[in-house]
Image (cartoon, rainbow, N blue to C red; front, side, top):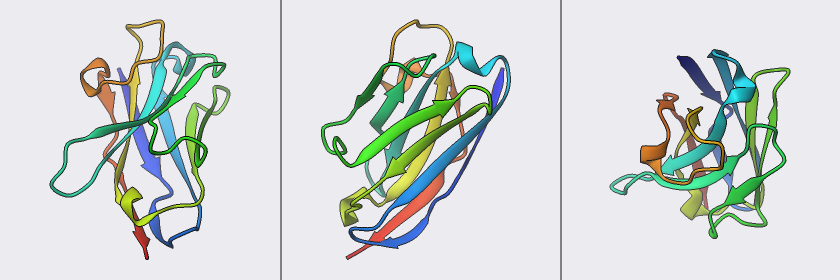
Length: 125
């Protein structure tokens, strides 16, 4: 089992940047595929980005490509989401997710076993 704790959310103006962190504890961090998802009010949770166990492969939702960067530091048991050029439509609660069952990146919520509690990001116009 793994515990995930997100941090780094907050209020930012459109065009600004935030860096989210997700600290993991428990099972060996490098054995997990990691993902970031977000959920806006009244909407379903949606995929944002994912990263392979080694960090060598990443995938992004079309809506964030070129603006967001996912990375991980296996020595620090942490995954990051650098968010640049933020837009009001990026406003949501952002969740970190982990799974060890699959070898490849996953983009569906049901494919992740472990979830953090979320961190809120608000982008003002």
